[in-house]
Amino acid sequence: MSDFRSWIDRYFAVTARDSTFAREIRGGLATFFTMAYIVVLNPIIIANVPDAQKQFIGDGAGPNVALVAAGTAFVAGIMTILMGVVGRVPFAMAAGLGLNVFVALSIARVMSWESAMGLVFLEGVIIAVLVLTGFRVAVFHAIPTQLKTAISVGIGLFIALIGFVDAGFVRRVAVGPPLEMGIAGNLTSWPIFVFLAGLLVTAALVAGRVKGAILVGIVGTTVLAVAVERIAQVGRFSPENPGGWQLNVPALPKEIIGFHNPFGLVTEFDPFGAFSSVSVLLAVLFVFTLLITDFFDTMGTVVGVGRQAGLVGPDGMLPRTREVLLVDSVGAAAGGAFSVSSNTTYIESAAGVGEGARTGLASVVTGLLFLVAVIFAPLVEIVPYEAAAPALVIVGFLMMTAVRDIDFTDYELAIPAFLTMVVMPFTYSISNGVGAGFVSYAFIKLVRGKAREVHPLLWVVALLFVLYFALGPIKALLGF
Image 1 (cartoon, helix red, strand yellow):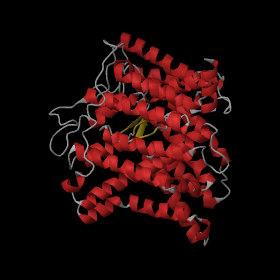
Image 2 (cartoon, helix red, strand yellow):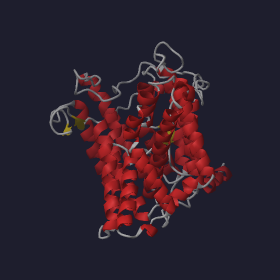
Image 3 (cartoon, one colour):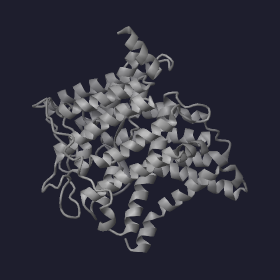
Image 4 (cartoon, one colour):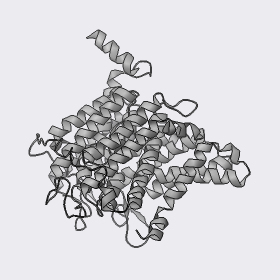
């Protein structure tokens, strides 16, 4: 046993990265509990939307929510374990938010679900080819170090905003300012109270350098949420019940085991069906949108979380970058093949890193928990958004601290860095923030007569982002 433990230590570089087995396990648990919501949320997004033929995923007359949930957990588990074993970094993978919304509301509306998932599969294959040819890694090298730092800071702001929104602390409004605090500006609901209690306790634990602070915060806040629901009978959020829980009603489940075959949808994709369902040009535009979003969401997440973990070198690169990006690319294709949407590296991995995770061993722990969730899915539904959100806010703070490494006296870099940091949370998109930074950096260098200081690949990427931002007018011009 000691020999096996030593081999695990050497393979994952646990001691070499100044970590311990206990930290890796705690980190894996924290990441899982912070992102376990995807097992519930992804089916809500894609399983309940009919395609152009009025069919649901799996050629059903009605939603196959349980089947999609099982597939979501299974693919997330396999890909996260693969990321840990091959990439050897503490990054978890699951169906990408934003990507799944785009697939459901834009692509599946004009073709069958089989064809839509076929495009997701093709996008994953294309990204894998870009990795194998060295293009994706070369783009990483072409980005100035301070812009990579800005990406990390922007993700910190973004992940904190996600936490505030998920908890209902920040909400959209129909009239007046675009956002408000709580309900009509008031913190008058039990779920918000639970979130604030969890945030304050987690912040105190982190400030006190308590081991397991983030995980303790998630578990403790969940227990509080279950108790509050049991006493107050708050119920689920709805327009009629704005003070309800945002996703899961935190109550002990009636059953613990709820198995559904995760392979039930594995043959339900058609890689080339879209090209006969819609015009070739529209299908290409769909793939391009998926490609750009997936490509740079992952890049931002890898740089941001990797920097927080202390894995990014002076050149802004991670160890085993090629392997990390290849696994991420395979995740996109696997998500399409299993009809659960593109799988991508999750910014919630930062919760595990904040707990001390530094190696792929944490990812193996998270992945195994996702596989367990295939069978014990009802247990995952205990944790409400309000219990996981405090961890996201605190992790957002930890990632924000990298802002001190940006030289704000150099406006040619500082302005693009600023745009990168603020556009991410303000537009709710990592890709938009990355694109804003790249395009502004290239433009400022151009008008300042310093175009040669911009790496040729960065010029290519900046031009691709210009095209990406212009997709709306292009589609309108072409009549789509």
